[in-house]
Length: 130
Image (tube, rainbow, N blue to C red; front, side):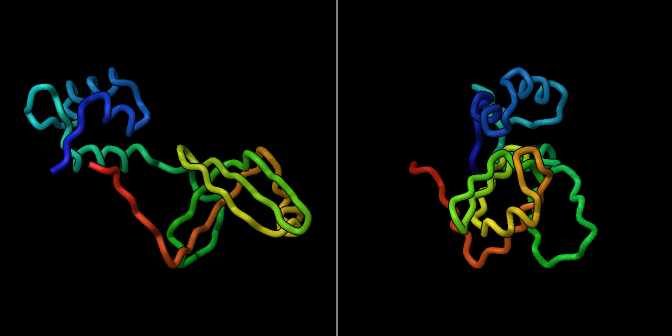
């Protein structure tokens, strides 16, 4: 089973090393008992899910798409009939290519609240080389 050093856990959770140490001291984040201190991968993943509270979805709709990223539009680049829209949703950057017409109809501009709805037929997962 994977385990992570305090500095690695802090980087993955986007917090400081001291925050991870405080969580360990408070019993919020368990360790493997090894020296130097390491955090079990499963516990780290569970903590990441707890911390990933996304902003509330303003849409009052039912949808089969489960991958909904609520965020702020950070960039709109229009080039002829197509446009690229960047949305920052927590630590995630979502980039969407759409028609310029759709950008205008939705009133998308930097600072706009938007929801990126992703329904993909393929998702590729990669892991670092050992």
